[in-house]
Length: 73
Image (cartoon, rainbow, N blue to C red; front, side):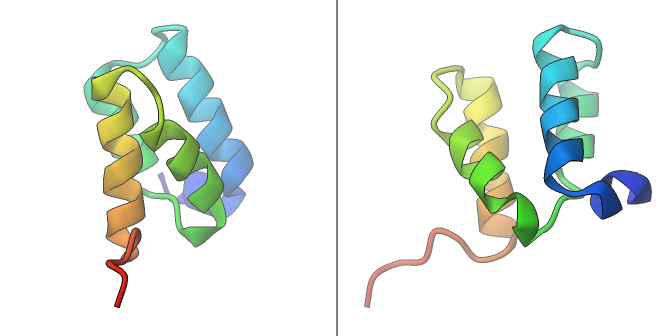
């Protein structure tokens, strides 16, 4: 999983594509998607907007892991 973190956004896109093709389980996708950092913020935001609640939750989890979205002051 460390390799995915180093790859960054392209790794995120690859995991997401494999998940959509059902090549990884929901559990595996959640574990894999949890390793990415702020470089994948755009991917997490797009995933949070996914109409599939099971997928969008992973997007929100990713954003919240590094403090996003923040509440307005």
